[in-house]
Length: 443
Image 1 (cartoon, rainbow, N blue to C red):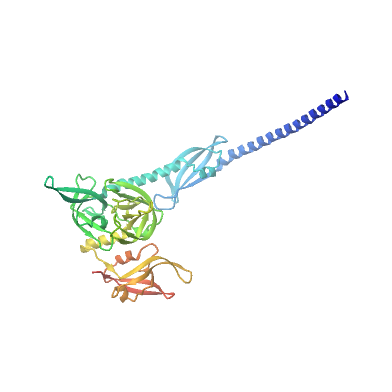
Image 2 (tube, rainbow, N blue to C red):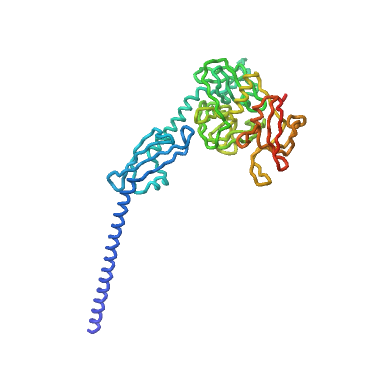
């Protein structure tokens, strides 16, 4: 009996302890709920207040007119709920409103910084991108009629039918630069004397025979002439002012049959010195000052135009790397302009030279200065450079007061005429000296 009573009182003690613990836990839970409610209320108030005064800025990395980047400014206003607000947006630049407007609703469960970090874009961003796409497609529509496909024609004997059979293949690209039928392409596209060459021009049913062409011996440039008038033509731009990151458009006939193909990319590099070979790894040729781009250039694109966002030709597509993706090259249009003007004036290409081999790159001087220049590695005897006192090991840092950072020395030399002086600033024996070289025409 005593044992049963003792057990009874012990069990009552346990119940009281459990009830006390339950009460404490309930109270803690109650206050936790209240605290969460208060916190949520104030957070809701913040969400109600914050969007009303928020200004959200989205930057666009590229501009449409070459000026500073345009910005889309969006002012938020409440939309009757702590979790939703409206965005009214305008595209503006430094001169005022740019001209696109949009409105959008956004969930403010995450703030505007969250939306940007998560890649959320307002409709005004999409509007700006569409406008940019319209710029590009408009340039393509305007430029494509002036881009041609080069056709190589040959003949072989069909002994079974005892007749001569014509065979034609599309082998490259080119572009018209004058209404009276002058066309630019690469020398390597049309330098095989075993073929006759024609061009396919937009709007023409049959290929047109090339009546005359000239090959530049020093640059991979060819000028073709067809007997046509009132042709569409492309305007030549300025490759000397190109900057890395600029948008460029390549048009041509990759693989021969894919005529009027368009690729878009950016200028990846400038002033590249490259060695170019044919499909079989032969006929090595050095090209100086090339433009590097990630716009896809393939076999058949050679000779086609590289066009900037303003619709002007800034390069002639010339080569692509077989060992890398998205690494292609174009001749800068500045050298093409010089050689075209030369050909129109004299009826032939001239070969201005000073008689040096050089390596152009950045060099570290003994005082720690980093400078870009052309290091002379070889000088031809009795050449203009030898007569002017240039030496092997001299570092040319300026030519005609132009820095060699973004332009190759060869392009400057090619712009000179025989008999003109080329003023050089040279680093020699830890000091700078000025020398004048009289340019001659290579025979």
